[in-house]
Amino acid sequence: MKDLKLPLQVKQELERVSKVAGYLWDREWAERNAGNISLNLTSFFTKEEVQGKGEFIPFDLPKEVAGYVIFVTGTGSYLRSLIDEMEEASCIIYINEEATGYHIIWGGKPEGFRPTSELISHIKIHHFNSIHKPDQIAIIHTHPIELIVMSHHKLFQDEEKFNHSLWKMCPEVRVFTPKGVHCTPYALSGTEALADVTIKGLKTRDVILWEKHGALSTGTNMDTAFDLIDVSNKGAKLLLACWSAGFEPEGLTDLELKELEQFF
Ligand SMILES: [Zn+2]
Image 1 (tube, helix red, strand yellow):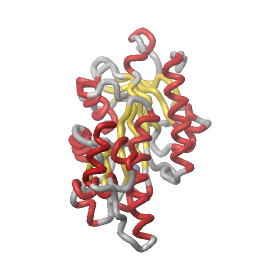
Image 2 (cartoon, rainbow, N blue to C red; image 1 turned 45 degrees about the vertical axis):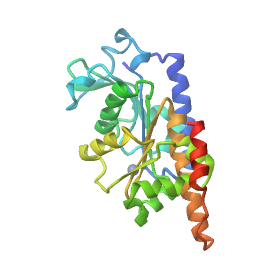
Image 3 (cartoon, helix red, strand yellow; image 1 turned 30 degrees about the vertical axis):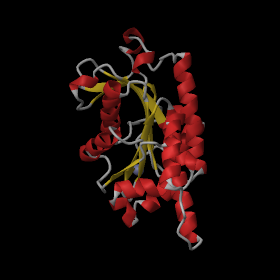
Image 4 (tube, rainbow, N blue to C red; image 1 turned 60 degrees about the vertical axis):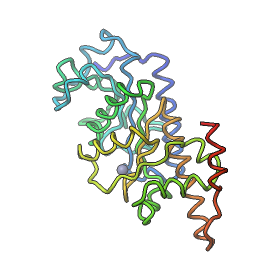
């Protein structure tokens, strides 16, 4: 039944996902089944292409997301499997027109495969983006080491200071994450409460940092979503390196930071 033919653009987006999964594994940001990834592919398919295919799974969804087509990683799946076993570790779902559930129309090969337990969060974020940032079709959640370390530091409790501490470390951090990091207080993963504070953070920030857990960002594709976390993490890594070397970094001055705003 899963005879969905993937358009060339979709294949290219999935290739990016696979490549980024390799980066996450190399960086030790995706231990075991940590992290999850999704893409809103709705605009790449016609109704005729996606209707009437695949196993139907009842699921409680908001009415507004009826008809969405979403690529998403599996529950318990290892992100490193996306490097060469994509159809085992992920799937494409089509949410039916009543939003009473979804069909798995591609991938999800192992018996009993189900999308990530964070599915509802991903769908809510995609819905938010489809209204406010329609070109942002990619979502990535991963465990970037230095950002997580910094979420245990008292600076995390003051978002302005936290961002200044990262931005001052090198010009690229200021320029490529101009809106900075949202410091989200600890909440249990998989809950709608966490999804809601994440969406609130995405209104003003580039990266959402969940206290003592990990980070999430969205982008026009998987590369740009990854880059936001990667650049923020560089700021955290440089800061921690200075502290490890036993000194407080001088940091870019306010004037130097201001001067960089011409590049946003
Ligand atoms: Zn996580």
